[in-house]
Image (tube, rainbow, N blue to C red):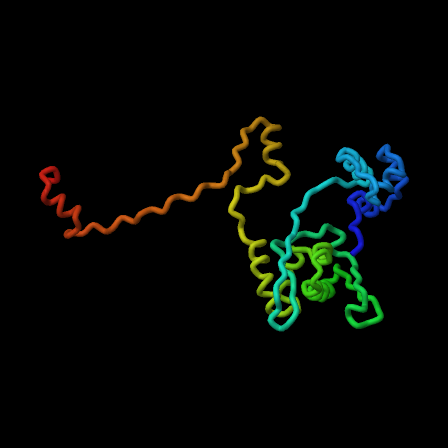
Length: 229
């Protein structure tokens, strides 16, 4: 398996610029950029941010997807993730290719993920290919949800993945998000107090009050007590 490209090289190639251009725009030497990309030298976080800025990109985090191997009763095995993920645009709509030898063919197989029918065909294959990195790099969670019912996959894989899809679309038990901190920013700017809605603690279950009848203890007490005359 080839070494994954560094974020520096990925950003540079996505921007369509050369190492020389990245070095010049970030006030760095080209030899250093080359060493960073080949992992011969480790840049500081400040340098990484400066290099990415030269490529009109920025550092971001994304969750690590853990895959579990499951046995297929009909033979073989398959992978199931612990959560769905996203593939950034335009990669999620890009053309992808897979060596034809995997399909017993001499020709490389190509899918255009911007075409829904081809995306369905590719996702159907990718979920069965047993390669986690390939799935994470090309199968987008939202697009997968849109075509899930039309995938041609074994029922055992569908049943194993279904809880993961259900978890992704279930309302989350946490405080509502303030997208990009917009409400906090705008209320501060105009001098209005920002009172975000917090997650409410669940109330303790209420004990139902039984129906009061003539023969209930409280009715008998009231009839016999002088204070209730």
